[in-house]
Amino acid sequence: MNNKKTFNLTSKSFAKIFNTKEDTLPLIAKQAIKKANFKYKKVENKEYDEAILRIIRTLDSRILKAAGPHRQIDWEKGWEENLQEFIRGKRDLNQLIPKFVKKGAYIRFQGNFIKPESDLFETDFVTVLRYYLFSKYYKNTDTLYEFGVGSGLNLVAASEIFPEMKLVGLDWASSSVEILNSLKQKLKINISGKRMDFFNPDGEYRLNKDSAILTIGTLEQLGENFKPFINYLLKNKPKVCIHIETLYEVYDQSNLLDYLAIKYLEKRNYLRGFLPYLKNLEAKKKIRILEMRRTFGSFYHEGYTYTVWRPI
Ligand SMILES: C[S@@+](CC[C@H](N)C(=O)[O-])C[C@H]1O[C@@H](n2cnc3c(N)ncnc32)[C@H](O)[C@@H]1O
Picture 1 (tube, helix red, strand yellow):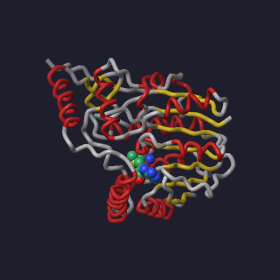
Picture 2 (cartoon, rainbow, N blue to C red):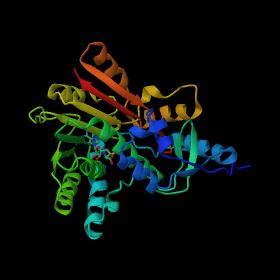
Picture 3 (cartoon, rainbow, N blue to C red):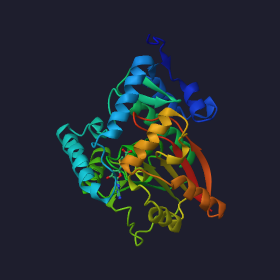
């Protein structure tokens, strides 16, 4: 029988997820929690079995595309669609929610699948996560660079907390850079875009002093070829780097949901080796890892694990 109990995420729950005290959550995060509907039910029994079967079937099928340099064209097309909808929809920011955020799908949370009441659970959770991390780590920085900026909503969120901050979004898709230009006009914020391919970072392009770095779901796309990009960051000595990314090495091989996430990452050629690489840099006293934490995920894996580090 289905468990009918409804759970809810409150400020207290988020504090626990971030391993902090409730009173350290910034006001803007608390307000976002209040505004959103974070009610959910656990997925159990037959529904759970069906979900597992669906994942195994997908893994066995040929529909999953592997990440790599050949995917640039797909990203270009994807952001072009968002751009056109944004322009047609009188520049409503909701048109910029990425299409890979699936509405109504099960969410991975605390070792289970959950079924949220609201279609916006994932988007709202990311909103809270961003407000929390940005407020905590970007305080003493002047320029925020988001690598793999996509439709720019993460930078818009940063501008709400730090209106004076210079915001730069980099991406290999020119349609993404165009979205940023359009956002600049609409919101009158200090935002600009630049094309760059992170498989071959442009060493001539230097980052400003006192800069902050962000990636969300971008290193994921680099598979095992993330080293040139991390070395580029190291050379530029940013103040702090936040990566909200799936981490192959944090999954537990002996746990069913985690094991399926591992298989999914392998099939899609997603980020692998990143955490050991950072740990090695830390052992060589080149960087300090400030924090690493799992939070939640979508149906196939946990894309919202965060890692924070800074060069020494
Ligand atoms: C999953 S999306 C995430 C977008 C955005 N960070 C967000 O949170 O919505 C990954 C982004 O990285 C970009 N990207 C992927 N591989 C790249 C590469 N090698 N060089 C530059 N950009 C890349 C894609 O175009 C896309 O915008």
